[in-house]
Amino acid sequence: MGEILLPIPAGSHKLPPLPYAYNALEPVIGEETLRIHHDIHHRKYVDDLNRAELAVQAARNAGDYTYIKYWENELAFNGSGHILHSVYWRNMCPVGAGGAPGARTTLYLDRYFGGFDKFKAQFSASAVAVEGSGWCILGYNTSFFSLELLQAEKHQNLTQWGTIPLLVCDVWEHAYYLQYQNRRADYVNAWWDLVNWNEIEARLTPDLIA
Ligand code: MN3
Image (tube, rainbow, N blue to C red; front, side, top):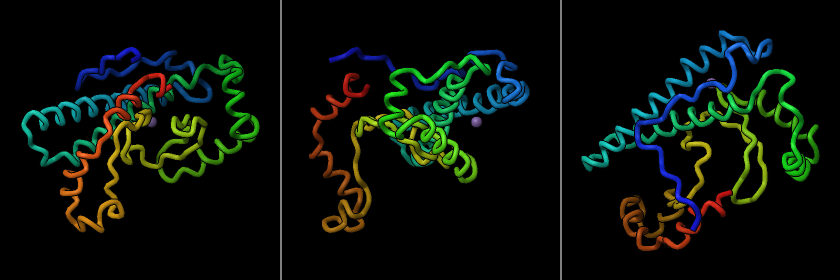
């Protein structure tokens, strides 16, 4: 069993300071853009994530899940916004200070994309192609042990990026319809008897998650 990291208590996320000055990314990103983006937009994600966590906690304590769909959507939207912006700030640095891709990065980029130039071309094409507002994301897939490039058109649909699945229940109709028809609640209720807690414990081991 690896180290157990203590969770951030509900409602206590903080806006991380930028790792550089507001004008440090000029001329590519101007000071005013960075100020508004970080101080106003990112802060709102953090504030609303905290609000959602406290609301869900209150719902749990009251046993009242009337608004759970709304609040979990808020968790997804604002949690993802907070996480992705935190990564975005750290992904950048002043022009000329970023160095070159390291040995590990190069190995993975070569293995998956067939070289840096192909990776860069695909990343740019993906970023331009994202419909509406969203993100282009180079990620590491912990199931396939490999990189993947994905577009996130709506980052709230319905994840917090960086979350690793531990226990999942398929609630598409194909998973239960033959036996339960429209009675999804009966299926979910019965499904608990199937859960393999040893598997979940193993997935929580940081070694596996790395
Ligand atoms: Mn943004």
